[in-house]
Length: 235
Image 1 (cartoon, helix red, strand yellow):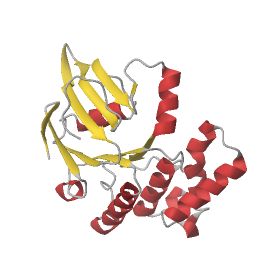
Image 2 (image 1 turned 120 degrees about the vertical axis):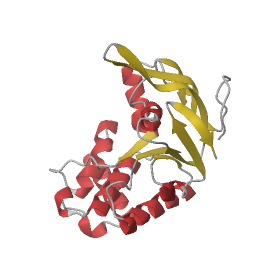
Image 3 (image 1 turned 180 degrees about the vertical axis):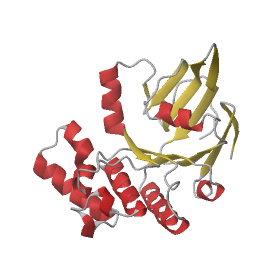
């Protein structure tokens, strides 16, 4: 929950970044997207990562989500050091531990609501009947019981984001990551999505979201402000 030093993760740390640096080549030079970042996120917490464009907030989320690897430093997820895990083990950890919600929903237009929700379960090897039932249950949980067979193009933006959240929950992950989850929604619909995330947090999930909106960040219990690839402050 607070800035960490370089010791090992504790049992309450669901995410622990230890001296993480991420360097990208740019022309003849380099850009430090993350510069020696250390941070702990405790189990069951709700964090908002804030900062201007280019501050490193999305890069940090990608590190936590095992979508990218640090140039140096270590990233622990549930106590496992992901920094040098083989790709197959990293994919397995991501599949079983993390749920992702994106600003643009990232739904498959050819699939129905329940089929989109079921997608992670295919990779977990669930049988058709069991995954279909899970898809229906989660659709009901996010208020889409009447939209089970609809395609994404037949849904509003808020409904599509609800499908995305349900899909993120399909594998029952302890950690839910959200990148600007209300960015493409009007204020009323965005508030409904935030209420849904808050209810998931109350159930015990760790939620880490990226946002540039102060009103959204206020819904979290902790706020981490990024600037120039570094943690500027935590409150």
